[in-house]
Image (cartoon, rainbow, N blue to C red; front, top):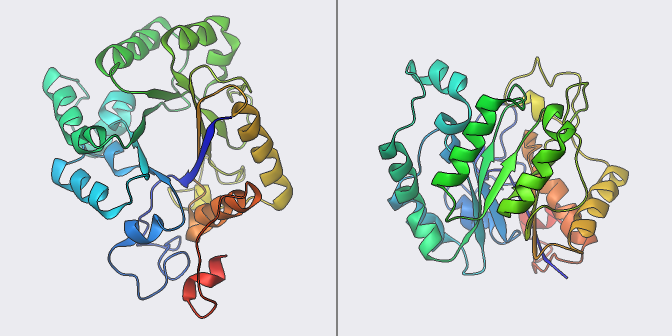
Length: 286
């Protein structure tokens, strides 16, 4: 049976209406949030690396602040996966160079050397369709980062419509990220059988009403119900029958709903081992 690791996409949401301060993080926890987080979870997805390559000093700090069994997934820089978003954010064209690749790898080194890396996540947007040009991009990502366990998230149905996609993932032992999100006509069709030794899930919520019109907070304003969590647990446990490791990250981060659902899932799986006194503010989470 596979090892099942449950966590969230990111752990620091300090600002805005959807902040975690005062919801998941008690008011007195102003520093050391990752250390606090690691008391409940054994893994987290690093999202800041999507906006800029990680710095070695920061990666070293993350390793120091978490116990030896705690593991990280690192999200690939948007320059590799979201060229339009990168251009809008920086005013520069997303022309990837050898220096960019080396810079990103250097920032990951403390996590990799400590044996704490679950996977490198390459998330592509819904506009990334199955085309000759985009296949070339996928192959380039795999070529340049093949030394890491890879997980790739594809959101457009043209990938699942193409039988060659599964064959390619299987051939290269790459985890095809299984997502849960609102369903549209263009949505990718998820599969239950893992394509690699690693099975990788991301749960984005089902806020269909504001998925396209909402911002980075309101789009993820969705709390999974008990019945919906049972559906997700069924998928996770199914993947565990063939994969060696299963990771599942909740990305419905509005006001700490991601850790709330993740804790509920861990409870259902019999994984929550935190001993919290009743008078501790954290007891409200359990």
